Structures are given as structure tokens and as C-alpha cells.
Image 1 (cartoon, one colour):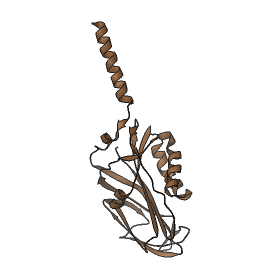
Image 2 (cartoon, rainbow, N blue to C red; image 1 turned 30 degrees about the vertical axis):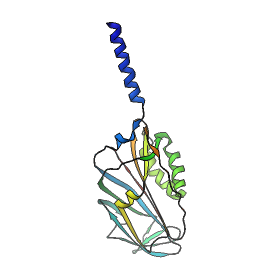
Image 3 (tube, helix red, strand yellow; image 1 turned 90 degrees about the vertical axis):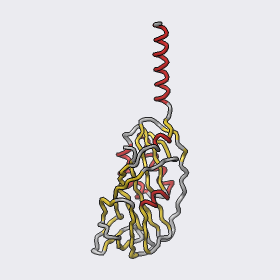
Image 4 (cartoon, helix red, strand yellow; image 1 turned 120 degrees about the vertical axis):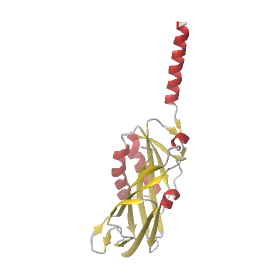
Length: 219
């Protein structure tokens, strides 16, 4: 009887260990209910071919919590080819900043599972592959890496059309090329199995607009 009880106990311990060590299925994470998500630090860089007066309108499906310079139905600015931006009062900016909150439930079916300690290297390589230049991806990394690198793992997804539908940009004159990089990530205690996301290369030509931002989910 004692032997039988020991066998049962050992069996339970082994079963618990296997369950704990097996990567989670991504479907369990996608069962999260609707969340009030902060869209953090989307910043917009403008690179016209010559000094140009530009009007930018943002239609966000949520509440804007902060903008800089202040957003008043639109941003009306003048931009130089080097990316410097000037408002009508002559003040200079490196980019346009907005932040907001929205009730949404992200469903991640593809992405990357990255150890927290590998966050910086992953972001450097991936953001460069996506088309950001050092000035842009360094700004991205110094904001996001401190929030992510202490996690054991991060599930990372770069949202495309889904994000653009939530935060629509209307820009006049119309840019020749626009790249909007929005990272959605979730901190994990254990890795999950997920299909690797295929990222599209980006070529800058003519009047180019670049935006990056992100959101943490599952907290």
C-alpha cells in the first residue's frame, strides 16, 4: 500500500513537471477578454524631399491621452528633408508624438518568442530589417527595452492592417512611402509555440513617413 501511494505521488509530480515545462499553446493567450490598452509613444517622423508644409490628421478609435506638439484636429507643420519639424509658432521638434487608450483584444497568431535578455539584440536586428534607420530604432529601443528585458520571455508581434484600422493617418501632401511599425507584446513566464511572423522589407523613396509605437497586453 505504501509503495502504491509512493508510485502515485511520483506519477503526479512527473505529470506536473511535464505540464509546467511544455510550451503553452498560443490559443490560450488569445482567450484574453477585452482590455483597455495603452498605445504607447507612437512617434511620427517626416522626411519630405524639400521643405514642405504638411497637414496630418489622426483618427484614433479610442481616447488620446497626450500629444506633443498639441494636436488640435490636426497637426499643421513644416518639415525639412533631414526630419526637423516646425510648428507655425517656429518651435522645432524631432517628431510628432501621440498616446492613447482603447478597448481592444489583440489576437496574436504569429510573431516571435524572445528571451528577455535578448530583447536589445532582437529589436536591433528586426527593426533594421523592417526599414528603420539607427536614429529611429535607437529611439525605439531605449524606450521599450527597459520595459521588456527583465521579463523571462516576451511574445512579440508587429501589427499591420489591424493597427492601421485603429489609428488612421491622413497626410497631405500624400507621402510616396509610409512605414508604420507597431509592436504588440506580452510578458511570459514560459515560452509559447507560435508561427514565425514574416516581415516585409521597406524601401524609402520620395516623401517618406515613418511611425513607430507599441502596446503591452495581457497585464
